[in-house]
Image (tube, rainbow, N blue to C red; front, side):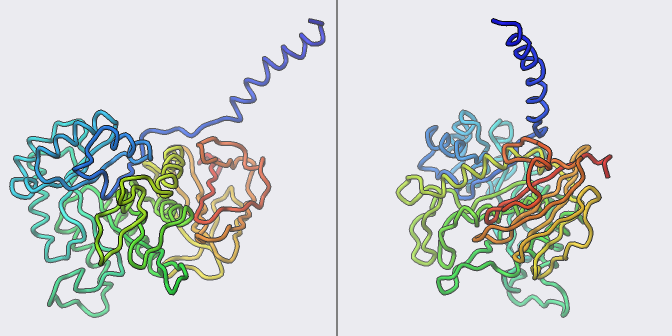
Length: 417
């Protein structure tokens, strides 16, 4: 080995490790983003193989109905062996909530107790009592109640014959009434925004207003919120594309959601009124293309949990030639960002704070077409890649394409503002 070769080898061994260590800076993570399967592995499929398959999709909480408490205990044991948590409901949870909670509360795979889906306001007093009965025994595990979307009608929200004061936003009033009467640790709602109208996929115009209302309720109450993505086709809801699923999940996260949910994981049984089909697991028990979609996206989200999990929302606004109903147009950029421009279709622009960092998230609101995003920023601004790697934003051109429904993320230290 000649002297010159040894010289360059020494330089390579000394400098390159330091270079790669700097260029491969990673997000700090301090937990796992909760990702829940609504209509998860059914009771009759409670096996290690099925729960392992669920876990491999990136879902870490399984919600199923069980015929009795013994079936719940079997599912809890299987869940523990595969690293999954269980949200459950069974007849005993209703008939004797204290005894049921006392029997199951110490199981390490228990996530929480499912009480009701989409109750109207007349059910709130009963639900409040039910929650308190469970909490009298077990304060460590949550009681889960999911609320209607804002396209529900007044009768769905408040029950028959209830008089609503004119001029009130009945949906916001519904959420406020729930929070007054039911002592839950978080709030959850479902809203499936992509629908098929005459063979044309379109976005419900009230979806972002729903997110705005839940964000306001979350901030006022101090409770985090959980939100959904639709992953099963039925009635006017088409088989979801990867862009549609990403749009829902990244929009939820940009608004500050602290847990994500899929409706559904397992295709519900044949029902001519709903025509459920093509969930991640089909009616035949085999995987569909949706399984691969959610596996890919869930891995992305876990790699980015250092951005979203436990973050404080600083601001959320929108760009584009038109912005969604109930939202506000961006009027001020954070100091390190000098220019932010998007295609006419527009984006959600969210600023989150976590520890000593701030993050800017730009979500393409178009689930069918790529968006042109132009970012000009100080040298202090870095880009967060989907695997959690952080590199200088200046390594990229100022204008880049954002895939349908996808998100671009930038970060800087707070003291640089």
